[in-house]
Length: 206
Image (cartoon, rainbow, N blue to C red; front, side, top):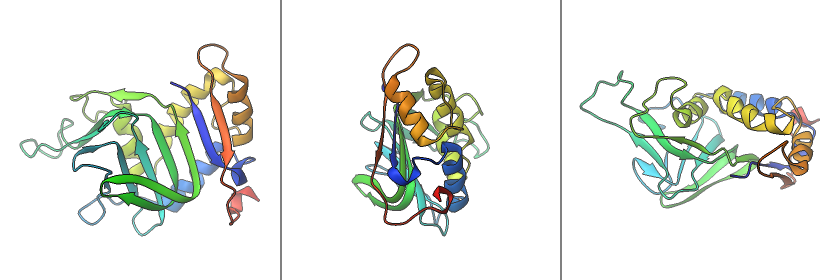
């Protein structure tokens, strides 16, 4: 699958690490519970996308699968909540979008309006039964981490993918764009596109 990084033009000279730190601070935590559960775009416990906003925050993320109903959540009332085989996500995670002003859902695709960055071609996969043991289920680790405002798992995935291009999340979006356009040392080509000039300026981009 083709790796891609789609970003607002104002972030060109911002490092991915800096953007992730900005998003994490702004999102805070979903404080996941009965009042802020997030949801799937087209289902109760499965769907093409899962999204949630931070608690008391306008910042959000969208986890997206290229496969129909490719993301799934396991809730088994017969198991204790502490069981690693309960309360976990599995499936195919291909794209993650971070930004502000979550819209959509309820049968339609989710969207974000401001400060949007999308990392595509992640190509993460996990199976039913992988549970939520750290390191054993990348799909759960990335999504659940983001729900906590923690980007570490996503950053690790990105660094592994970007290593083939001689860059990392320490580099700016512009550097990564150039590296992806030049192509990896081996395997597939990739694209990074700067888009959507924003009306506001981000302080870290100054």
